[in-house]
View 1 (cartoon, rainbow, N blue to C red):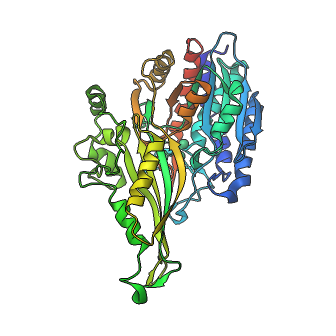
View 2 (spheres, rainbow, N blue to C red):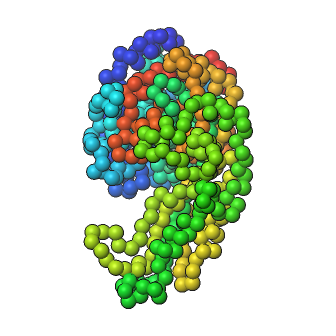
Length: 464
Ligand code: BES
Ligand code: MN
Ligand code: MN
């Protein structure tokens, strides 16, 4: 087996080529939520299969009812653990396009705000740049010694950003092929550019589209105003009712299953030194808007939310058109924590809306995401191994943190494959994931590769 030091040297020497490869992947417009990009999603999957094959993986594009999955296998030394690496090759839509300073699909290495080199483009951080950190680590092992230290299966999804509609069926149908000793997931962030992080908690997600219908057509607001029900008013009032003045969610049963965060956990988060100013300042805010009397990290890591993600209705174009619209529409999502049950939350929300529906109005719901919160264990051998590997690379102990975002597949790995997951990622809070001007620091990409090389090296000697 190649010595770790030569693998790390190889990674360093390959950086220009590694960046070129990532830029090629970033040029592919694999937006999973928009069917206009269906062929681009397939192209990204095919690109990855070709790249993994060139390293020596047995790789294939696997069709689903939606966008294809990529599955690639590589043998490891006898007795070494088998790891399943997960990432997603699909990306978020790019609108509003006019806010990008560079074309989202013409990625390049550019100078970032603070003078650091950055890789710009949609998916550079979420999640193509991150998944390529692992692929590059494998490439370096193969180039130096012809082998990998662990048996590796790489599993890449193309529908993560659209709620993974094909995942459960795929895991169910391919469980034997995908079973491993531990799942590695690279889709999370660090708190700052010099401190590595392992994530052990994720919030769940329930989302719902809601449409309120009233009159059978748009009405003149002079002729009908005062007499006709206005569905925008109904929607705005209902959604406004979801929070009280203390920032708590008022939907009955919403807090079922939500325990107070243990004092010890809160203290460990306080020790990280995040304040409302440090957290909100960089995005132009200063005062936390959620539940009163809780720390900023507790609010985003351990408390549930109800958010309106989009809302529309009536006339919003140039000029003015005095109408009472026939319907109004919103996308609402809930971040879940602890033991909150997605099914209960969805029906509690629907009941909440229905109870507020005035005469003549009708409501239509369309369900989306449906995943519970995830809490991973803090003290497993693979975690100790990863901690030591990261501490070596970054010359700093990793922080063990939670995250406000959701990666539903982590729960599904447990359910369908019986797998625990190790969540290590190198994204940064200012990477602008899901926003205009997404970027990934060149140093995140480089140190991410070195980190995975070290993690594979220690995992090889660990009884996962
Ligand atoms: N990589 C993110 C999750 C994430 C968010 C990690 C913030 C680190 C910081 C993932 O791709 C994502 O966007 N997840 C969605 C869930 C999905 C069902 C659309 C999310 O959290 O909204
Ligand atoms: Mn992601
Ligand atoms: Mn995402």
